[in-house]
Amino acid sequence: MKYRPLGNTGLQVSEVGMGCEGFSEDNYAMAKELFDAAEELGINYFDLYASDPEVRAAVGEALKGRRDKFLIQSHICSVWKDGQYLRTRKLDEVKAGFEEMMSLLQTDYLDVGMLHYCDAERDWDTIVANGILDYAKELKAQGRIRHIGLSSHNPLVALKAVETGDIEVLMFSVNPCYDLQPADEDVEEIWADRNYEGQLTNMDPDRQRLYEECQKRGVGITVMKAFAGGELLTENKIAGVSLTVNQCIAYALSRPAVATILAGAHSVDQLRQSAAYSDAPAEEKDYAAALASFPRVSWVGQCMYCSHCEPCVARIDIASVTKFLNLTDDGKNIPETVREHYKVLDHHAGECIQCGACETRCPFGVAIRDNMRRAEEVFGY
Image (tube, rainbow, N blue to C red):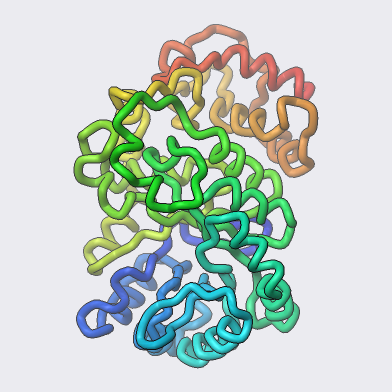
């Protein structure tokens, strides 16, 4: 298993993490089986959005004696009321739900306390106005949560929250289908069939901006719905053909700021299949050819960070140079972290000999030589 920094939190997280979808199965016995497998596989990060007390209790039992081996991302504002799940914005319910969660998990702290499911701007305003964000800050000051997160499907709302500087981790839906859809307060719209029937062009710019802003600010992204609920593994909405687990994971992990994919698993075998990504050969992770073949999507000019342009004659890491260039606000501002990350690359854009071999291999028609010239101008070498 490979590990990545979770933004600026200081946490190192397994690039394949674990969702909680299967924890309730087999009368909740699956929770321990999945945690046993996760420990064996080197998976150290998991998400717990479910508020079912029996699920939380099963996770608490599964963590006994090995709390230090796992990083917990669990959700504030996801509570259990009248025998069912509720997303609440009432501060008293949030507080009671948090205390119950901590008791059931048998832990003194969460590594990431996730403000749960915010897809509308007015909902974010309610989180702030009702004191829920302040409550999360209090919990952080007390050491009961180490970092504050937010889960969302709406790039504009997520960006507004990230720009406050209070959000350290963003849980967001990332896959090649959803990335084509514009922001909407109704989460159902990103997977509605009708929205994939016509011609689509490249990644939605608000999503691209969100990922890049998170990278610049050091906000780590944890990915939900990397497989679109399994739909991308069968016949997806765009191409009518399936992608593989490895292709979906590779796509999400190549987006700026992404640290880990929270793979939902209904069995140990499914979890092992996702975890096998780390040791899979490069050709099994290659998503570029599949995306380029989608008949109703034009990806022309959009760098997908797939590295098909390499090997470079000058040994430049073209995908990284392009990503850092995209993080500079069109050259007007270079964040310090971007400048430093660019600096430590083994080779820089100024070493490009403009041979054009990279452009003959790019599936998306990116003007790579122009990008290298721009990067040299922006960074100075």
